[in-house]
Amino acid sequence: MDSKFSKEKIDAFWKEFLATTGKPETTTYMDVFHFDLTEKWANELLQLVLIGQKRATASSLWSFELQGINIPKVGDFSIVTDWEGIPRCVIETTAITIVPFDDITFDICKREGEDDNLESWRAGHVRFFTSEGTSLGYEFSFEMPVVFEDFEVVYKID
Image (cartoon, rainbow, N blue to C red):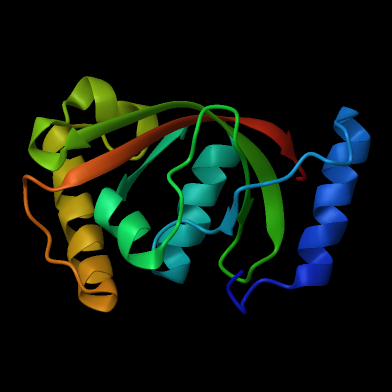
């Protein structure tokens, strides 16, 4: 878990989720994260999730591999935080599609709820993947595999 995230706050939030939803105490979460690499976008994308507009996210397969992180699976839970690391909701993965960046269509990417057209989505994601690649050690390419994760919010605090 990133040092930005308070283990105590995450644990308390998760226990509240389990109690509220009646899920067994043995239920675990896969990840704790915020969207994007900047405060502005992390918080804006979180708001889109909380209002139900953003129902998917795209990640570089290479980022999972380089960090030794498992790819989400259908049924996995993750905790989404704001930029400051405050937990705001739990999402459940509903579908995973791995597709080359260049093959992503607007029908696919519009589920992310961020853009009005494919060109805008591509521009934003080229920026993100280029920046992420620089920090993790991969180079963006239009052929790179993208993990497209559909999800639903199963718990949130307002």
